[in-house]
Length: 411
Image (cartoon, rainbow, N blue to C red; front, top):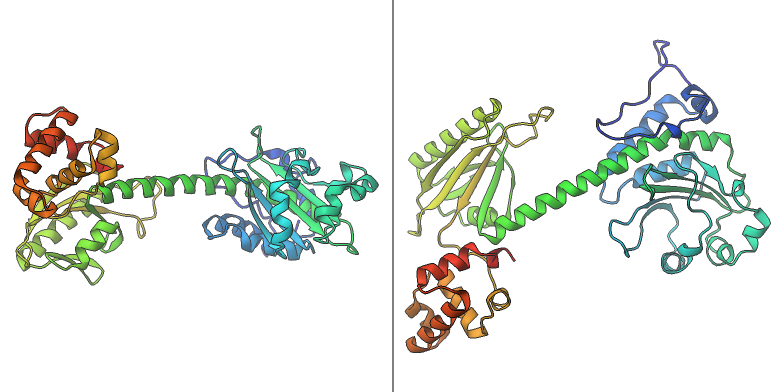
């Protein structure tokens, strides 16, 4: 292992807290022995580790890392096979090398089931010729159908993770005419395995957080509720689709200089005061601070309802990029999203009854709904009685409560 300029031995890059790392990935001879065999400059090693973690944020994760490894290992392919998140779904494969879709597709569909380079010893790098007879391997239909056309001759790999199914599989190959993989290449891979597992676990947690975010944002959109997140300077970090639509109309509220602003000066001062108080409360870890106000609309429409809430930081959050306040906006004139198919399915309504129910949910009277739908007042009243019977209510106000507070707007 190399030393830094001060002469001290550099330590391994620290891992994110809470991520389990198998120590078996390290050579029994210790880290020094691995560094000596890998003949890897510590600066290059540090860059590889950095790419391992930054790769969790890439659109196609770990592409830079795999391409760098391909050059470091003088390989023609470096592949990361991620465990499928759903049973029956194909494996997620990320690779650096020449793409051959005509070969890869049969592999995913058929040849993966007979691939001999699976179920490897966990958390350490092995060579294919350590596991199977070389002559039998080259004579196999699998080799002739998949590896030979892709110019794959020598193989090295690791299965990473301590559960029944590995979290991911690393595979490295060299072409015909190249040298076999040696102890240098094995040691380099072994040095990265703990970090690669930690990064895969980190990516999984980020995916879960993103799914949750989309879920909650989607629910707010369905309910026609605008949500805006502000940083500690009151600047907008993120907003959902409904908030974007409301602010784009510039009818009462708008985005001015990257911040939220009300059209009337007095209301704008009040909005800024509420936001400032929420941000200050967030800095004092006071999550329960909520304040509200109405915002007039120059168009003459119903005032917008605005609620401002503090968003306290987590213990280790970075203050410059985290939300400090949340602003919830409700436009009374916006319709709660629901479609007739949902109402028909949930309450057994006919198409005509579902259309009438949607008109009532939009705030129209029975007469207005009848005119909009092109039916007579008597027809609409007959349909109302049928809707009452199917939803178990006896009054129109009770019907609206059932429709608006039920799951129809969320489906």
